Length: 367
Image 1 (tube, rainbow, N blue to C red):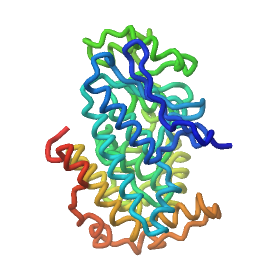
Image 2 (tube, rainbow, N blue to C red):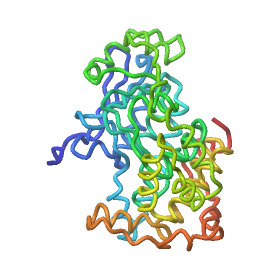
Image 3 (cartoon, rainbow, N blue to C red):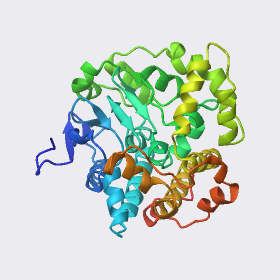
């Protein structure tokens, strides 16, 4: 069941000084379309200079997701049809992500339900990232033969230890405690309170640091993520994902025999063995490069990779197998890690063209 044909894909309202942006494609878990990106950008631009708007809240319609990512099927179809609509989407999406990171007013993301891919690009740019007991966070791109984008090469590469490499190379989902532990979220609240969050945030003292202002207004306690599953796995994650390359990571996981980590290592190994070998190797290189780049530089790198990836990477095959034909039997190229050499990986990092919208945003300065 889809949304009504005339339903706006972004709802922009102002409530007591709080601008509320609702992603409104609940049947698609609020997956981002180009129209949604443009609607969000237009509202943010309008509110940036509107004194009646003191802060902005992002939320998703429905009860299942904040935003499950970009509309990957539409991007696949654009490429197959020989149009450049997919590149227009990436250019405008990345410009939106950068604008959120730089927004002049406090921003809050209510990451209730699925928050993945493009949803993470929005949420990670906000000043206050709030999770609930229903939150499911992931950068799952390698599962469709792609790589983490929307600034993922920037924010994943800045997580503690090798956690970002683990999340990027496996695409696994994490929940609220793990998001708080590794720095992908700031606060946790009950999902039952999401509907009234904007009204509560209208009472916030935004002269304070945004996280503290939101925590106080929502009546939340400071999070204690010490019991997070990732905390218990950190020793093994840092060991195995600190290996020099993807084949070495797999060998390291296969050698894990400690009772506390053996089951996790076996599941992680099986997950990675099903992923695109090329996507994993390019992801590892992109994350390592991203650790040394500014956010605008990371977005520029991701856009340059996109230009190469649709004609030469595995995303078209991944979407075919998992979303279009749904046979779940992708034929990755190359088929094995042994066939992915360093020259092939590096060949994806030669395009230095800056997309005009990022150039206009001042891609040379840092974040």
